[in-house]
Length: 338
Image (tube, rainbow, N blue to C red):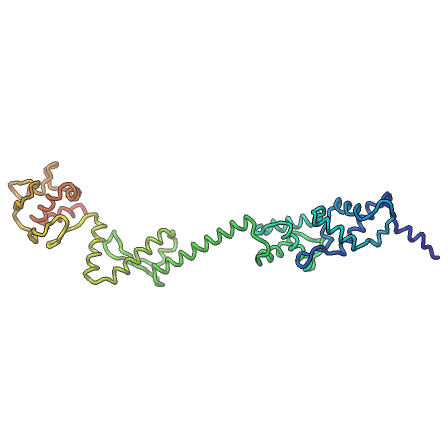
């Protein structure tokens, strides 16, 4: 039997009806699920929006309290307009489960910045990828956050920027280490540098470089580069430089017959003599025997190696006389402590 008024009455509700809060919210949820808010990759299905309180506020704006309303035929155009304005004004945000899923997802991928726009992009891709609002979790959203971040669409968070800076610094250190080792070894499994302790070049395995700091590698690189430069010199130039390095390592210079030093003048005789002579050097003590030249007045014994080294600065005239008189014996005393 046809009963149009009863059927019509069964779908019409006033706001003062006890069932209104539950039925109107359910009807509005269903209407929202049929709509999309935003454009392009910014568009998100309406089912993702609105806490229960926000949906009730939307219901109040949608329905006049003085009329009966058919909740099975909600005006979708009006819903899209009213809800869209509320979403833009931030009167409607994400549903509680969606908020939690977004929070969990960005916590899992902390390298990227979370804001409203990035959340919209993530939800758009996730829902377009086949996920449903009701079942979204942080694990579901994390891959989309990574993908959007890797493409540069979502910017780095402060944490991500710190990690990127650290990664760049580590990469630079790695590149600098590789560059220095290549420079030192020239691609070989060993390298050479001048050893001050031995007074000559020494060969070391390239593996010795593995655990050294960048500062240590720079020092060795400078030494290896200098040795290669020195080997490009003439034999005389190489001999002069090697002797200079040996002197620096020893801490004093060993003079040889024929050497010209800052303690000698151009008119002094070459080579040692067996007898001391007075050539106008007034500060040189005159003794009955030349042996007295090498006697330390403070100890009444021969000068020690250290005492002779000090004479180079405290009494250069005496050193000059010692070398002119007997260079070999002077060197002997100099080397006595080695």
